[in-house]
Image: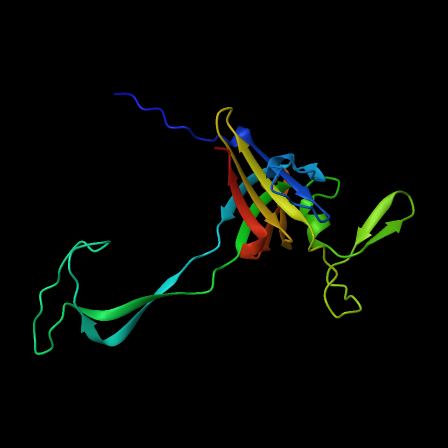
Length: 203
């Protein structure tokens, strides 16, 4: 019996970024919000959800368990102390961060990595713009745009899914050619707190 599983192809994805704050609301889907521009030069992308890790905590003593609500087995009491299982609990650790890693074709104009990861721009005579890295603001922090957002929108004609990172922190990677006769590329990483990211599905 044939089974068709819906999926998204690379050509069905659209990436976009915003350099300023976006006012989110419950009446507008993420893909309908206004962003600065689409990212046409994106070659590949990897999205990492915030890590949700757990630790087992052991306690002295044991407790009896019978089959019932959400319990599917009964232990066998052995030894001097009557009981079934050692007392244990699961402790949730602090949740991780959203992360997007990607590769951009290095072009002759600013891209999302420049606009979100570089410092203050300076106008240069002749129609040029110069950026610095690591310049310090009066408050002692690096001058970086942490209001920006990144959106990955997937639409195959029947299903839609959108991944959003807002208030992102950008890290610029290497600029290098793909080969002696190839084009230049740049890697980048965007990260944000768990509370500043979201994934949205169309029902």
